[in-house]
Image (tube, rainbow, N blue to C red; front, side, top):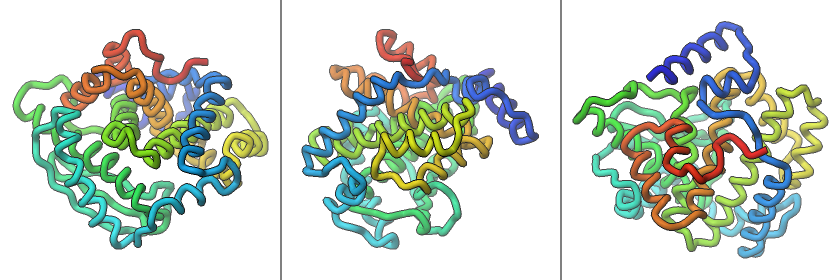
Length: 321
């Protein structure tokens, strides 16, 4: 409880104009260090992404993203909600088996047009979730719809509903209202990014996209640290484009803006690289570890130190540099 209160206070002070050092701010809000990942490790993750893309005949160049998207049929944004629901129904029993979640939940899907970085967003209360699809950014393929169903519906919505169920049947030490500037976000975003692969580990398109997402998030983490260490915009741009040749300067500008100017995103966006890196390592470790972590994560909102206690020999959350 105290770590959540500390996170709320740090975020409130940031909204009032205080600008803490990034490491202190992320530690207070996300509960994770900003160690960052060693360049050699990031390069190896990039090589894993390139191998996975090569397995589906996608080259690593300025057209990688376009070539990958072309492998799966496009969906009109207005149809995406129905397709996401269909995938959620198809995989619900499997995810319940993986996670031990037993409660029911309701899902509302809305199509909106918002000037924001996100293509889709899930929020809600208790067992009722709302998925908003941002027409301005959303571009859906069949693989995207599958990933969104696993990430947003069977990841976030089912997880939040199960936490509600747990808290209604027993005394719990966590606050019932959750927020993205608090230290359970590493769990929520890490688990949700890897759940599509956990449910379809042999699907080459899902495997390639997850490996690519891992690499992109580590590059985002590098930019997060660079811009707060005083690197120039041009240096950040050159670094990002050397790592990700399919990015455009506008992609770099958006990444830097979100991670430097917005008090909420300055905190929250660190949960994505910290989360996907740890959870993908859990997945790759094999054995019963993934099932144990998933079951625990659907029973209570774990913070980074809780996750590390589930796997003491595993990598540290927040980097290995």
